Image (cartoon, rainbow, N blue to C red; front, top):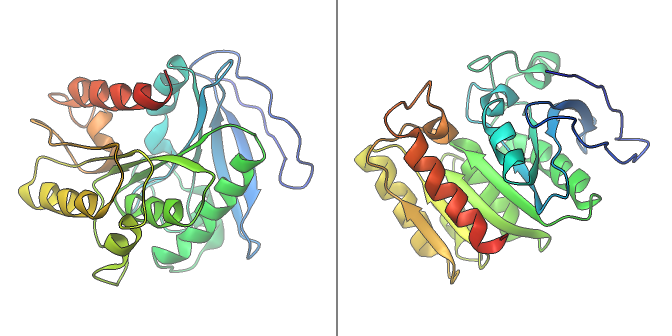
Length: 243
């Protein structure tokens, strides 16, 4: 892979397109409280939209090293970040390692905000994509931001300390809304309940025959029996808005 360091947080420079579908550009953002946020930017040529990719608990932007290139092939640019609440499940989380403090899932909302602010300046339709706890956060973020045009939530749940917070946000969500989960009956029920709260006219739940927790359901290394079928559903949903 090719690596190019970009410092756009202060300069606001345009990001050059990736040279190949499997390349990404490391980037650095600043959250509103000054925390440095590390990310990987996957740039598509003539992108249809910009997808912001957020990881699950104990994880990092490395969760999307296989997912980002596939999105580029579908002409979506994507930014995956290391949130301050994370770990080494898919490789080192640079943000969490540098932050060096215990933090809650809700605290990581500042990191999502930083990514959304950066994306807003790119002048492309913004899609939020969350995995596990960040699936809950993207629903909350999308409910309060008109610039977000679509949400994909992988294994959403009420993970944020308030048993109705995510449902309340979903009840304000009228944009296209996709949810999926592991095959586990409790995860399926949690996703169904959150989706049902949304008044969106374009919403879909995939109940996978074979699925694992979070965005890992799209990784053949984690979900060998279900990854391809689960990908097909995601890509079909994205095409409905971005043909």
